[in-house]
Amino acid sequence: MLRETYLQMIKNSPKSRLFRNLFVTDGKGGKRDVLENGRESCAFFVSSILKVFSLVDFPHATVNATLKDMAKNGWRETKKLEPGNVLLWEEKNGHRHLGFFIGGKKAVSNAFFYYKSRAPKIHHFTYMETGEKQPRRKIEAMFVHPDIK
Image (spheres, one colour):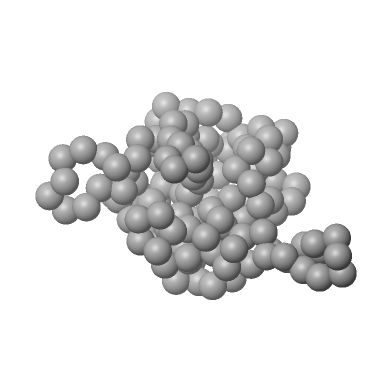
């Protein structure tokens, strides 16, 4: 029931504030929120969900670190779009973006750039709105893990 639980956790995550903050020391005796109160938390959201199911080794603050950990733990690129896939969207405004495909042309990601919620949100898997004809953000890669296939 791993796949079912994994998918349900992703579907239950919208509006959660759990993934907004990750504090590190600033080297001066203080602290700094590297996720900027949810502005930069897509990788932390994705990698935290994956860590719960032992599909990565650690939660990460960056897309690159998350992708590296995913590759190390058996995630492979796929051409077949299926619920549970991790999606990597193209770079926009200097940022790459991660989220999950949940089926029915929908994805869940920490949707800051288009929705400003600073929390996971269900949205069209290309960020299109009703009536739009072009994707706002193209999918660069899709990833699948054999344990959740």
